[in-house]
Image 1 (cartoon, helix red, strand yellow):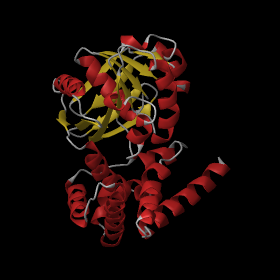
Image 2 (cartoon, rainbow, N blue to C red):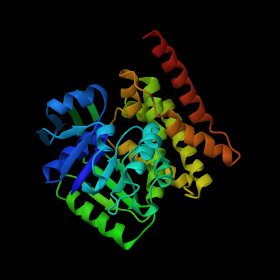
Image 3 (cartoon, rainbow, N blue to C red):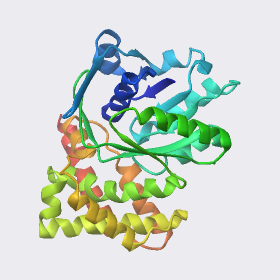
Length: 316
């Protein structure tokens, strides 16, 4: 399978390398120093149980959209969620007149990426996806370190016989790697379940500069996390996903048993990157408001984090 991976960061690099190892023809789309480095050097992905290192074809988005789109079977978008609109618009123009349309797979944080993609691509070719039980960060240029057993959930937004065949083919490929893959009938539900976890620990860990484990074990901070998760479950009801407090409780208990993690927002604050606050916390706040409720836990944690982080960035 010929696969383009837009975004060669923690998640994109991980999936690119494991798919490369089992025989897929991978092309990374990167930018800046990462693009310059990977054009001339190998990508290294380390995991406690395995290491994969090789030279992978890497190009810019501009170079991609001058190539023949019909050469590719799938495009995995693994960038920050704030880039989805720009990338989707660029790629939709690139594939507009294709007879053979590649499938678009989102492996990003947030619950609105697929909705944005549906505005630009044929609904039959949009695949929602998420990763869980994985921690993956860029250590240095060309080196990504991952841990966890790694599970991938994928599902079509509009079910057809053709995209069902593609999903099964893609799953069969991933099944050759040291990961587990599940095809979901309702991927939106799973995306919101992950948002419960993301809203629960991402911003607060960045604010406190602490991993999830100690915060979940602390009597006072664990109550904050529980409140953050509960608000995410409530927000889902504004878009018809209709998660309950019981669903939030399940995610909370899952996080208590999962390995302590250093979420992406904390890593982003350390590397002076933009934060996915609107795509995670902002989604919870606005959807709670649609239901006539405030989201005090989410509003407070995200507002304080944003204020302190922006003040810090001004001094750099």
